[in-house]
Image (cartoon, rainbow, N blue to C red; front, side):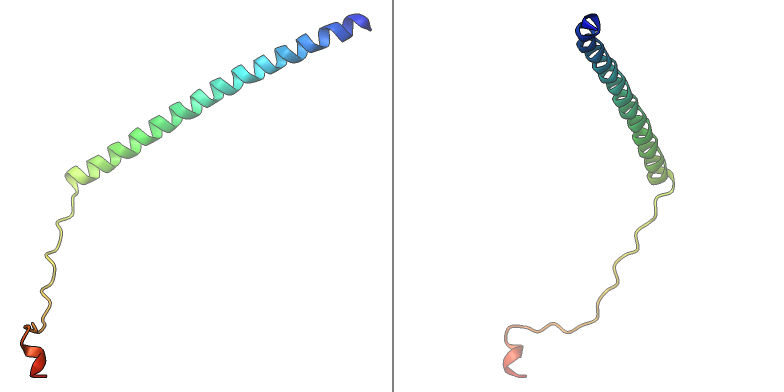
Length: 75
């Protein structure tokens, strides 16, 4: 029993180290997958913009009346 009480903190420390290492590897894979997905989305967007760009329509001319600075007195 005394031996078990001495070894339990080392077992817990070892498990914590293993979990920490596993978490770092998992985080690295998540960053790697995120980078790959981001680059793929950027490439698709760049290809769409480069080859399938929409031509913008010219803005419609608004028909209206220009009120000059002296015209407001005549109204």
